[in-house]
Image (cartoon, rainbow, N blue to C red; front, side, top):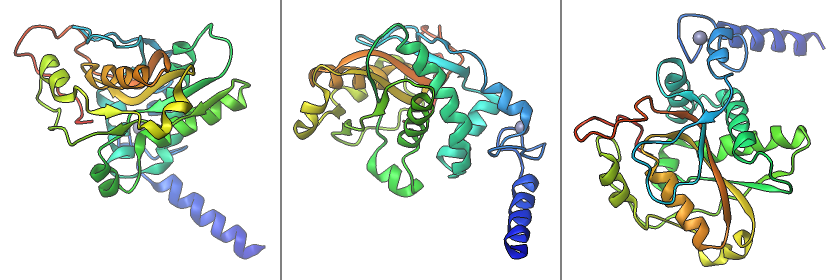
Length: 245
Ligand SMILES: [Zn+2]
């Protein structure tokens, strides 16, 4: 018993001593974040239409802007495998899902946007799938019939999206996602929300929406944790410095 208590104290000490993943200036209090950075993920979901809007994009909802604390936390989860961060990030995603599917009776399925398989192997985890699972579990605990349906697959490698404009991203991604035939029966007639960590130009979410609709799904919205700041960056030459996938 004493040994267990000591082990628990040392574990708590380790957690308390860890730097906050959002600001690295304060000690993390809960789930890898200080209370101030946790607040940055606590906003209400808002509409996050990019400009220009890629054809076919389902109405997108985001909780935060992809910069500062929120960008650091998303990257720490995705690239540094600070897996404890899935809790606050999944909670934020759950709020975006709630708004995306608001007013819809009946079950909703969250379909995560897949990463390239090589990226998942390199990172050791599928960050978007993890976020979707935590968000769905939170919503189920709140009484909402929400599940996860990881049926999207990449059809080929795509060029790194970073540095590409909206039109280039759409061309780069056309046909890049699909629901394999063996999964089509799971989608047909089901109400789904596409989920991802970040929306930049919306090209990825539009391609996901197209692939799901082709499999017969009713895509009612798209939910993400964060949207890049330049939502009106439609002028040629403005950078879209979002993540690669
Ligand atoms: Zn912090």
